Image 1 (tube, one colour):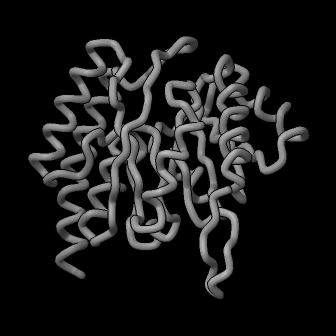
Image 2 (cartoon, helix red, strand yellow):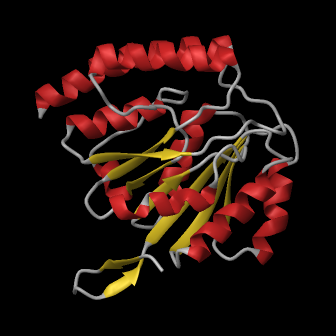
Length: 246
């Protein structure tokens, strides 16, 4: 069982909000929820699971709603229209009530049981970021990721080895000082650059990555990519302004 010390020095279960963004993940979301429940129960966490249905056009929300009565701690946040990956995360983070926020994907490309790799690093850090030891994505997505990581490092310096890895955990209190505004794929950079700039402690750990077996990814969409780069340069200006103001 994962235990942490509370304000009085007593041991208490680790408090975690699991946020699962989902867009057209009807074939995957039930398994993602089951894996999250199993992982949290295995470590004995005080947990909640928040699925954000980001305007899905399939039955993602119906599947989640059907699981709510039999899954303690499961909640559904539903967007009537698609707001993008960043918009889904921001809604999930806003709904979170626990001390830590664990971000994972609903496409089952990560193994939720590997949350145990994060646990030893959490007490001394504010964010623990997974990096894909062997990325199992098509070549075009890996090429996009290489260009993105290179650009981010040129603009902000080293943030993490795998900036857009969708498996990470961080203290919810980080969001009190790091404001997220991106609706798109830039949200991970926004979180990490903002946290680094404010002195938060960041650790990294390798995680397994698996090919998507069902559904379709949207990250390689040209419109998504162009919007992310536009958000990136706008965020750089905003972060510098915020830091100058103190």
